[in-house]
Length: 72
Image 1 (spheres, rainbow, N blue to C red):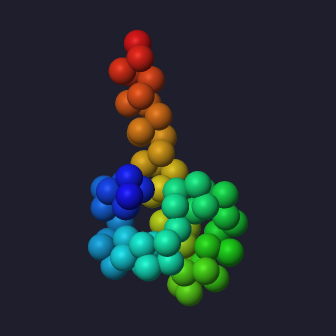
Image 2: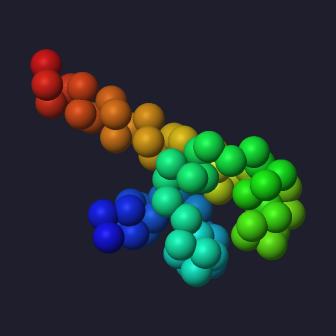
């Protein structure tokens, strides 16, 4: 459920967020997939899959930076 909240905060159009949720993917799965494989799973083109993966990666990096700042 936590990931679902994270999906809604991604910097991508709602239709892409819905696509991720429809396929029940989590951040780890998205980040560990090759872009071609992600495109195949989501039934979208390469560029769209790349946008999704980049958004998830950027979101994960921001979360990690926020956690590091809180520990300091």
